[in-house]
Every structure is written in structure tokens, then in C-alpha cells.
Amino acid sequence: FIYDCESENGGFPVFKWHCDTVLPNDLVLSTAAQLRLLAYNVNSGVSSYSGKTVRLANDIDLSSYEWVPIGGNSTSATNKGKVFSGTFDGCGFAVRNMSITTNRSYVGFFGSVQGAIKNFGVESGRVIGFKKVAGLAGYCTGTLTNCFNRAFVSGNSQTGGLIGVPDAVSI
Image (cartoon, rainbow, N blue to C red; front, side, top):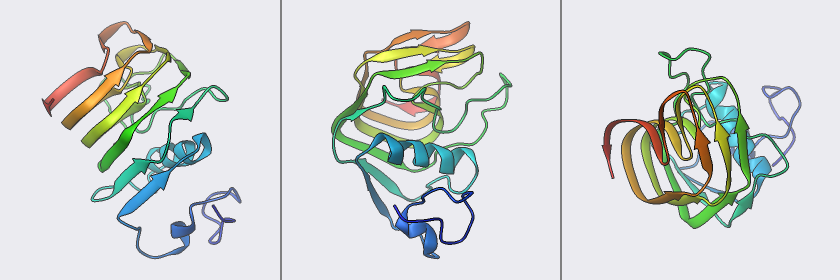
């Protein structure tokens, strides 16, 4: 992380590559703060990470914050919001103690994903949402390989352990 070099993030720290004109193809994240910044970048429209690979370097404990899903997290049950469109490779690691309590739709570690998630899991936590709710992804189009969810999940409809609404998903 470095200081907000281009004053695009309200003075909050940004990834070093935010000051470059081209995003690197491979990002390695190791802290809850870095995951939160990834969610912020997708949710604010900075990047969908299309063509990029995001990897985890270790297990990450999310107990310090109420988790905001990466993409999705919409007030509308029909608008999936911003979408993560890259590849997320957990490299065999997981997040723990993820807590989401909301009346929104498209809720999970990922709210909306249109890409690939692999070698990743949600080890523990609680996910409560309205519609399109799951531990891993509220809405998913793409591929899911070697993933798991052990968090408690509750929703009004279209709720699942791994995926709330699968749309052309290869598992």
C-alpha cells in the first residue's frame, strides 16, 4: 500500500499499482485490509479485474469488520450491481469469521461474480441477506473449482451454501 497518489480514493491508502497506468496481471493479497480494498475497487467501479488474477497468500481472518461483498450487495433483487470479472485463486487458503447481516440481495463473500473462483473457501462465519444469498457467491456465472463454504447462510429466497443463483456455472 502507498498513499493515495492521485487523490482518487479520498486520501485512503491504495495498492501501489493504482498509480500505474496498467494493472498488473497478478495480485497477491495477504490481509483483511487488502481484501476490503479489492471489494471497494469492484464496488466503486474502479476495476472489475477482468483479465486479472487475484491470489491469496494465506488464510485471512475477517472478524474485525462486517464484510461488504465483492460486487453485488444490491438494494434491488433484480440488479446484480457491480461484478467481479477476474480469476480469484485462493491457493488453498480460506477466510474465517466472515460476518454479513443485511437486507440486501446478491450477498456472499462475492455478491456478483462473472469469472473463475478456485482453491478457496469460507471456513466460518454467518451470512444473512434478502435474496441471492450464499457463503461464496450470491450470483455466479463462470467456473467454480475446489471451493467450499462452512459459514451459516440464511436468506429469504434463492439461497445456497456455495452459490445463491448459479447462471451457466461449471462446478
